[in-house]
Image 1 (spheres, one colour):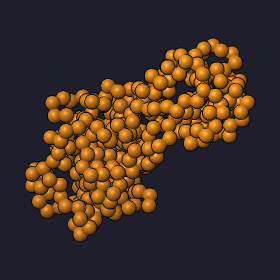
Image 2 (cartoon, one colour):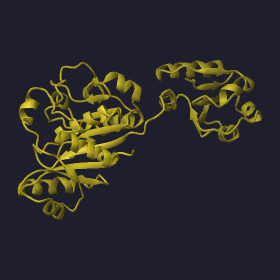
Image 3 (tube, rainbow, N blue to C red):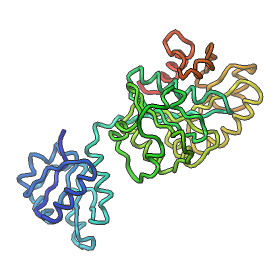
Image 4 (tube, rainbow, N blue to C red):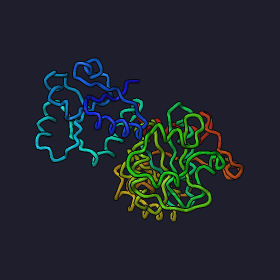
Length: 346
């Protein structure tokens, strides 16, 4: 894997950049002259040009490329924008004020090829509708199809989606380990920190503390999930807090689980009203009941994505810390496969 490239002769600037790179977990290639930088210019994921060599780099006429930054130590230098244009940089970063940005840029440069994962939110139309079961089954089914999947528990007052999976004792990071972080979260570091089962990683709450998720923490996690996973499934609370609103705004599709009875549809209509303030594409997943599908769609005015079939002995299976079988011949496995097929690109 190629490393970020620094072009400078300034020892003090280089010391600062090496320190910043260490904070990002990155190592640098260093060129003290434009001629030394030439073979590294194109393959480097990021190029940092010191203002001391900006004119010399411009005179060498390197090919145009993305992700070039001019780094200056004098933020009031009136010549910095001319140098920025001359070297073909996309921005000027002044130290020390721009250290956090450089940490994030360098960490981004060290990430593997991004996966552009889709975010799928699931929310219950009423309590006990089965949203957490659907979230878990969709995530499990996707991971068994060899999609790298992140399952996010966004309901601090729920029972814990790791407990639903039967893995509440598995070691790994929980939300309390992430809520204090600001800014970017590395997708590689997130994968390494979370409990994982094959291609499935799970982010849930600890058993001993209830704490709301800040919107910024949810944003950072979902951005990391977008870069490092094929699919992110978010199990939402029915009362939309700032973190849930952040997830809804980033979701390609939101599934509203509706029980097919009068109270279930009335409750779902209230949840839907709040959900559509933040989500662009909301679709219903119907639990079997006394109402026909046409009645539900006429009441809610949203399309039906599918049905969530009843599974024999589901309650007993979950209470034993197990999830129902999701094979291609089981009703639940077939339903999840159909939903993923419809909602995800080929």
